[in-house]
Length: 382
Image 1: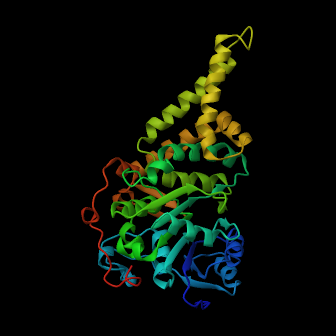
Image 2: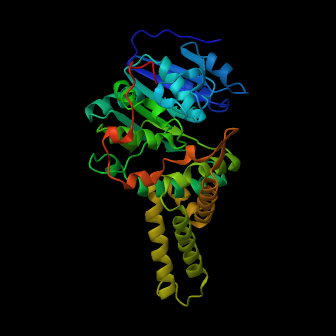
Image 3: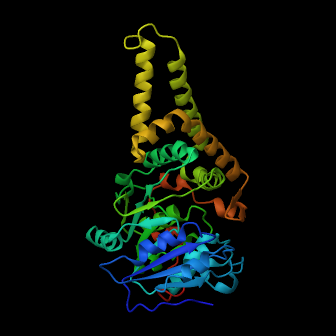
């Protein structure tokens, strides 16, 4: 059964894929339904949840709740999601957001995760920002909320390295091959989304946000990416198990040489502690102490780019770097074995692991070279 809410000619369709999100979905929707300054609709796509996700979504009268289609089979399943979906093995999230996109009416689509909280007025400001910058795709990196030991130790390291790998200046430069987006917040013009094939064009990709950004940039369309604590915040993982599975899924795809990066993290962290533990006669004059201070300063400058509080940055320097190295190697192993588990689904085989950050090292081709077919009927054949 489908819960519906009628919005007349919405400018934005907000699409929230949700699979067992009873803990966070209520706060997310509460922050969305109170947005002002623009007409919008909210579509929650229940991705076959087994908890109270659908019940929570349906408790918001203005929210439309739909069920995600069954995952398309190799013959495109019952979805019949355009010809370019044939023989593709869709990921669960791609299938859910594509389901939402087919039901959407807005000229802009906002794909946002169920664990996000949106600041008042941020939706209208985001559309205005995209228009002012001529961006077909605008993606925000949310403020990350870290609570537990594991979050505070690991997340600053992860996001600092992501900031180095995906510099917004390079991502936003049309001449740079670097493309990126954060799947927690992707605002895209519907016409451009349809033209590159939408999520059907990246159906197999576990790292669908980066793949979609690259498809947009490859087609000559402008993308804009930035850190946006002024618009949205999120708490991604609430346990070490969730954090481990989430980053195992992503890290080897996000970094071109995860093994080398893991070794580098361990060398830097070990060097810091060796220099600290070596005896020194006069702390403020001894060469070892000076060297330790230099290493500490370097690591602090490297990690503060993650936009976490200073206390979390220092905690991550002391404890998080070897944990990040462990996750990198775990992710590398999982992807080498072509086997990733996420949200109760197992992704195996090479089909799901073909689009990673190494694509960003190549010049941007024309859209025809990417074999991205534009749908024949805009907005309904994604």
